[in-house]
Length: 182
Image (cartoon, rainbow, N blue to C red; front, side, top):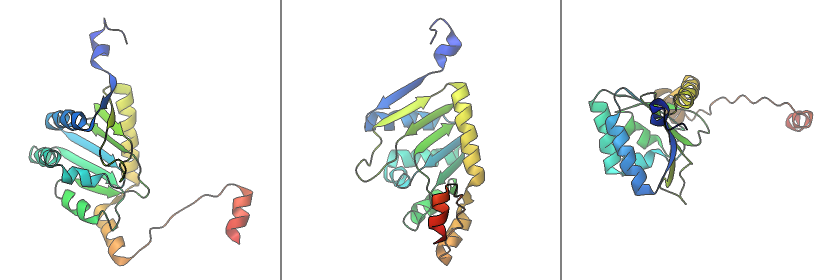
């Protein structure tokens, strides 16, 4: 990076370390968002939003300030209650096999972390970037996922009716085709 150029020095990519540091710095970002907050979160990622009071209050504040919040996640029977709670402040869509966690704030700030699971219930490393070309690419990726995801209301109906969503799988290898047909 050329330090003599003010525009390039304003755009950076870095890694934040430590769960508490990440929460504190994320709160600063959440309270600075003006228009839009887009989040893709894998299974288990919604619970920490609701469990951490400071994060929950920041989400409520986003809604109060009129910030558009969109969340893509895998909606299952286990996550249904969390989705219903968050649907009061955000648009939520379902995408099967959603994995990973990333967020884009105001189309100019990007952050990503590995999946949360029982072994690692907190994010301890977070990659962040304000590099415009990269953030624009990730925003495009989010929009693509959003267009392919299912609205929460439809997914709730599917779960309540016991409907198994249609899955289209393209099999290319001849050996797989033969095994599938038997």
